[in-house]
Length: 268
Image (cartoon, rainbow, N blue to C red; front, side, top):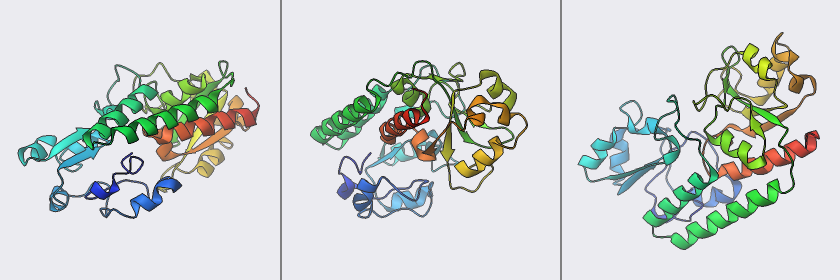
């Protein structure tokens, strides 16, 4: 988001799990010194002498991540926690995230960096793209199941995170929208009971169990239970980068990919 707002000249550093950013942001990223790890030490962050620390993940502001927020505050360093995960990954969510939450965060950050006009431009661009992608889509009879990782105890999207944002935007239904966690563990028998129209698969390069889209598809088509899914029998898969399934400006690109995928599969 900071690169998209053009404030890279005011960034003391960045740390993220992905090796890459959106193509149009690579030049901006190249102007900022990265940390060596996603969660650098508290001391190494302070060495950059930041005025503010901004994070998406709740884990960052824990002793296991970087440090509790109070440690920064006590030293006069302001903090901003993205509203998308203030409650933490494993907690039951009281409300579902929406595109408006994303736009509100853009406004917050643009205000903090005194680039309100750029914030408005970014928001309007994202709104236009989402509206164009979903125009006359007709996905109201489509059910999606979002599989993030793991095969024995797979993580599927519950009601309230980024997959919910994208599902609502295209007008479809999330197969597990009755689950209030962001990424609950769901057994394959339960997936078969819901029998979603389409499986949305995260393509991760971490090398873990069922991380890559190729590994997911190989499992789906060989497992005795998963292979019974209608989506598997008809090879109804839509593949998105794993980062797209986290709340961020990438979600609008995910809406575009999802809309295109539904059209190509012939389910809308």
